[in-house]
Image (cartoon, rainbow, N blue to C red; front, side):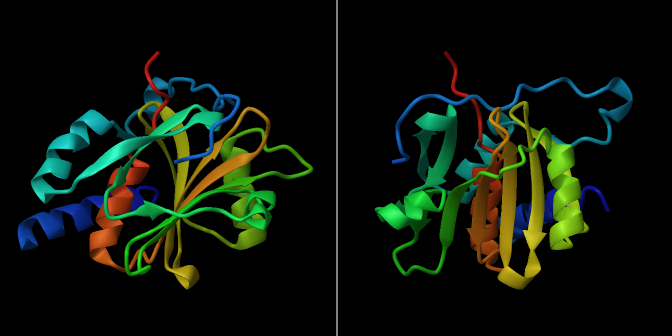
Length: 199
C-alpha cells in the first residue's frame, strides 16, 4: 500500500470533478535531490505543478503562490485561506505559518521541527515516525523534484507533508480536517505545488 495516500488524493480529485506571508529571512536550502534509481522510478510517485494547473482551473479554484523565503520555497495557496499573525510563543515553538478559512473550519500550518539529533534523510525520518509515533503507512515521493514524505494522522484528521532540510530539521506542512473532501482536494493541490523558485 505504498501509494495509498497518492491514490487517495487522486480519487478525491476525480470524485469531486465528476460530482460537481510567510516569514522572510536568510535562505536555507532543502536537502538536494538525487534522481531515483531507474529500477525505482516506477515505484516512486512524481508530481509536477504544471500537470495539475488544468485541474485547479477545472475546479474553479483561485489562489496564488506565496514564498517561504527563509526556506527557499514557493507554494500555491487557495484564496479561501488567510494567514494569521503569529505570537512570539508560537514562533518559539517552531510555527512558521498558520492559516484558516473565514469560518476557521479549514486549518493549515507550517512547522519547523528541530531536534538535538539531526535528521539525515527522509528515509531516516520515516523510520523514526514508524518506531516512535506508530505511523505505519507513509509515502516517499517527488514533488516538483523535491523529495517529500506524505502520511495521514487519522486520530487528528490531518494530512502531513514533510521535507528534510540541510540543517537536519524537518519542515512540516499540516492540513486538517482531511475528512472534508473539498479541503482534501485543496490540500492535494497545495502539497503538490511545493517548489524551489526559478532563479
